[in-house]
Image (cartoon, rainbow over all chains, first blue to last red; front, side):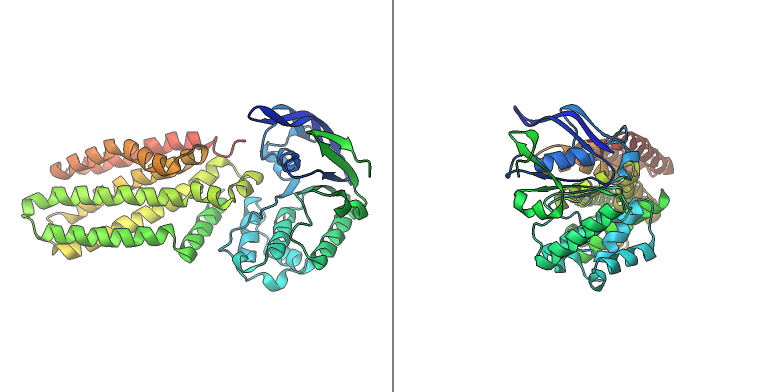
Length: 210
Length: 215
């Protein structure tokens, strides 16, 4: 369970996020919507432990998300893929699998095949389009089989096939009782997914009126 | 742990060899500088050549330390992949070791190459090349620790273009002075002292590296 307890985040003088209280339980699917600059990415960075709150706490089953033991339970996909452009898809995935202590070659192949990326495995990341890089980055975040997946604007850069691929992936993850937290600039993009929609307005998280 | 270090080093080596940006510049610089140094050595009296050789090699090592510094943690930060490391459960110390070993390999290979090229162009006039070689590689070992540390510090600070070489220069000056002194005395204890200084500095740098991935 991922929990935000009275989280505030400031950059300089102003607060980007104000008193955020949020609980992501096992099997939950939450979409946070808001315009650019509303603090969606900051919220996901806090959830992934990439940044620390100015006030309050972000906990994963009672442990601070920044602790190394919490990292195994989180998969985070930022807007810009965390891939090395001069390495092949397979080299990238094996490298990251190795950092999690799981350099399992058959598992990498299995994931690539299942998610339709096998034909690109020996291509350098720089040769892939942004949409395919994002797909590979999603696989990177899923390599260590985390119970919680965090994705920043998941549909950005994806064509209709990519969107269908991702929607199916969300459904599959949820059927395995995984939790998913995503962000989107528009509620129309996520309305059909069946996610609970929350809106970020002036740094506060409120239930969407949609 | 060793496997994780190996993966980091191997990944960085592949990246450097494939795009040849900083590594390419470092190789071209070291070959050009050592050829010129060797040529200069062949034109001066043999009694002054030792000091020029030491100074020349230390200058090459200093520049190489700046190149390797730009290849390590700073590069991860520039590529945006440092977040990928921060998201993983890897310990800062292991990450730092990986970067340090890469620096060490590159520095030692490039300094050894520079030494051989200098000898070739100088006409092989030196009396005890093995001693000078030991002194050069022990000093470059120290410089590679400094290089990894300066790369780490630069990630947290602005104006890295000015900071990286400044940190390297300031922290290297005592060892450069030591190396040039031992060059004239030809005492093998000098090599041991420089290696010990490297280990001492390595301990300090490793302690600081614990905070590298802290948020």
